[in-house]
Length: 142
Image (cartoon, rainbow, N blue to C red; front, side, top):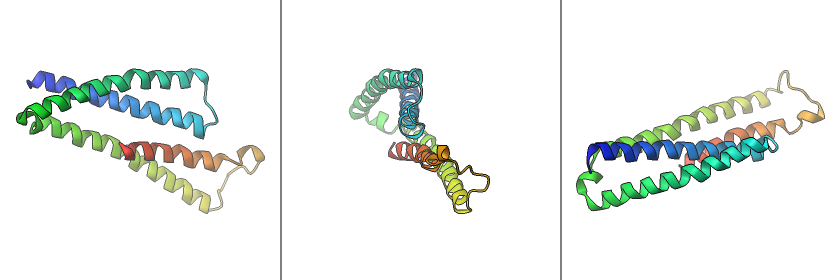
């Protein structure tokens, strides 16, 4: 496979997979952690998934088919760069959300200084924990 086509395929795969990932995370956060979110926000996330997921699948299957045919494609440096780059791209948010979750749990363990105890804020810790766990789980899977 020529270099320009290889760059095109892996660049489209990377962008579309990141778009799908963050749309799924935002959708789950809106539905589970923030109590519903706005209709326009949920519609945008679903639209992003509907558009970007087939785009990723077409290009990824194209890359896999070309890699199955050519040994040079399987050994291409750009293919390895794509894989390691995507792993790093998912590991960064996992680390950031794990740090924030751990900091919040320590804050809860320290009797929540400055935290409101009214009934309206009773489920706030669960929402914050879900907010971070959703990103950690989705990125860890990918």
